[in-house]
Image (cartoon, rainbow, N blue to C red; front, side, top):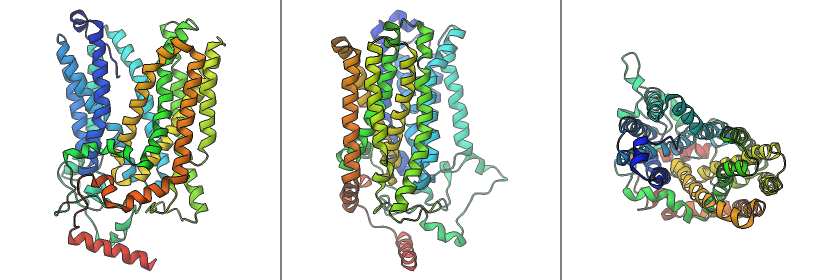
Length: 490
């Protein structure tokens, strides 16, 4: 529900441009929020940050429900609402990376990301229906408040802390805000680490490949400059190559969301209801493409592991330092990239030639399905190469795709007016094809070498953006020796 109806009082007191400014403010905060809160979640845990963001979103929704006569209040609360809601997908991605091994990550990421996309697409439709039935915007924000409160209760009572900085492999005792509210009930016991389960200490070795930065007391370091981690990822060549695929593939979906209303209104004469229904094929394509992406990600990893004689350990995971994860994730991506490019190219000339509307509607389904598949695959790879800062890595992809999508949407209408829809989509197809091909080629040929070079240089690691790794405390040194001894025995 990114663009709910604005208060009528604000429309009277402010010009239309000022009303649209609320959408601009929301979008700006949407781009900035993940870059700040994702590193915070990586350092201090998912639960406290997520609870704080949902609480902020609920408070902002309550403020929007009550502020019926102030345009300034509308602006402020919409900004707070954007800050509270925009960082949650990156934190959810981090939770998936915490609890799943690399070989089975796709089965969780596919449904999760497809659900996020579906909710984003259905939100404006639901908001419009609520506003139409209630003859006002108040119930829209009230519905958002109810959803936020329900989400807050679900997270507070049921979602355990998963960040490895806080719980390690899930065996460290936790307290305070990191404990679920259910654990405070009298008949619930707080879980504790058992000596008999010490063998689990080396689980998820792919995430243990590089330890988080620690203070002398063993707590994670976070500084204000850590908010720029997501922005600094683009400086690493292995990350930049993956971000090209994320940004270009997502821009396909976003561009079509902008183009659909004018295309079906001007070319086919659809009314408002028919235009709204025209979004459904794209929505269905996004959902199905995300689910397929999750399955292909796991299948491609298994095939590559067999080729490299690597045993897939579904309990402990694998060490990715010497594993070609770039080739695994981008395996068989070129046919999908070719299909995406050809479909976008054909779509432009189909609508230019006024072909029956059923043809572009069917094409929208396949275009959005393939673009979602490629975007999700690249997002999984980005988290794989930055396992210790999963939320920050996903936030970096969020920033890249928002920036490219905004630029694509901004030039759409001027280019359509200048060269027509056929040539516009031809230019767009060429640009996404070149950027996608460059991403796949660079990652498969040089990605592993770039990643190993970055990981071998302490000052180049994402978590070391301000200072080198400090000396580990004695208990952690002992654990390192235990892990080394176990590797030798194997």
